[in-house]
Amino acid sequence: MNIKNLILPNYSIGIDAYKNIEEICINYGKKAVIIGGEKSISVSKDSILKNLNKIKINGILHYGREASYENVDILKNKKEVKEADIIFAVGGGKSIDTSKTLSETINKPLFAFPTLASNCASATSLSVMYNQDGSFKDLFHQNKPPIHTFINSDIILNSPERYFIAGIGDAASKQYETEFSIRNENLDYNNFLGYQIIKNCSNDIIKNAVQSLNDFRNKKSSDILERIILHIIYTTGLTSVTMKDDYHISLAHAMYNGLTKIKSIAENLFHGEMVAYGILLLLTLDNKFEDRDKVFDFNKSLGLPTSIKDIGIKDINLDNKELNLALDGAMSAKDLNISPYKIDKNMIFKAIIDLEDYNNSKR
Image 1 (cartoon, rainbow, N blue to C red):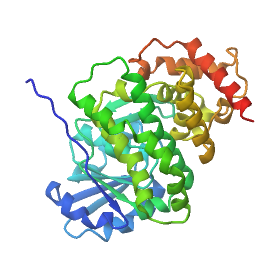
Image 2 (image 1 turned 120 degrees about the vertical axis):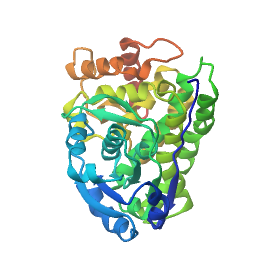
Image 3 (image 1 turned 45 degrees about the vertical axis):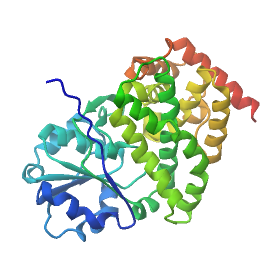
Image 4 (image 1 turned 60 degrees about the vertical axis):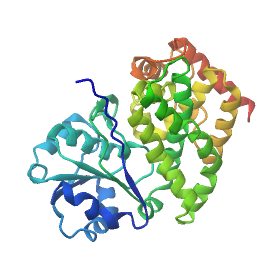
C-alpha cells in the first residue's frame, strides 16, 4: 500500500507528571511490567505505584547493563514480561532503548518514564544498540515511539548533575548536525517538518542552559528548567521521529560511535559528553568558525569536552592505535551517509588537529 504514517510521541511534564498514568495507560491493559536499572527503579517505583489503582504491576525487572540484543532475549522469556499487557520503561537511554526493542519484538505497548534528562531515547522510535562490551553495534527501528512519556521533573532534579549536563551537550548538537546533513537535500514534508522543529533548538539551549543548570543545582522546578529538559528529551525526539536518520545525525554522532570502540572511553564518558566534543569537530571541519567559537565557549561554561585530550586521547597522531580505532569507527558508521561533501579519515584527523590548535590558542 502507498501510505505514509507519522506517529508522534506525547508527554506529561512536571512534579505531578505521574498523576495521570492510569488515565493515559488504562486503555492499553491492566497488567504492567516495570523494566529499568537498579537506581532508576529505586527513585521512581514508589511514585509510580502510588498513582496506580486499576493497573497492577506483575513484575519489576532489571534491563541488564547494556542495551543489547542479548538482554532483550533474556527479558522476552521472563514470565513477568509474557504475562504483562504493557511495558513501563524506566530509566536512562540504555534502559529505555532496551525496553523499546523488547516492545517492538514482542508487540506490546510501551510507556516511558525517564529518570534522567540525558538524551531523547524516551521519545524516539529507534534504539541505539550495543555489544555486551559497551561498543556500538547498530540502530534498531521501531514502528512507533513510546505511546506516552512521563517526565517527572522532581525525579530529574534529583538525578546526578553530570547526566543533565551531558544531555544538554547531546541536544545542542542536533541543530548543527541537521543543518549540515540536509544542506544539499530536497526535503519531503516529514523531513521539512523535522527541520522546522530543530532549526533553532541549539540556539535556544545555548541561551537558556546556564540558567537551567542553576535551577537544577538549586532543586528549583522552573519553566526554564522544563524547557531545557524538553529540548533534551522531546524536541530532539520529535526530530528523530520525523526525519530520516541520515538527516539529523552526522560527524558528532559518528565520532561518538568511533570513540565507544575504545573501552576506557566507553566506560568513563557519557554519550552527550562525546557528542559535545564531536559537534566542535564538525563545525571546525566545515569551517563554521563563528558557530564553533560560540559552542566552544558554551561547552567550557558547562564543563563539557572541547579537546580530544578531554576525551582521553593524549597522543594525537595517526600512529596511535586508539585514535585510529576511533577514526575507523567513525568512518564505518552510517552517520556520514548523507553529507554535502565527502568526508574522509584525513579530513577528520585534520579537524582534530585544528581544534587542538584552537584549544591551545584559548589558554
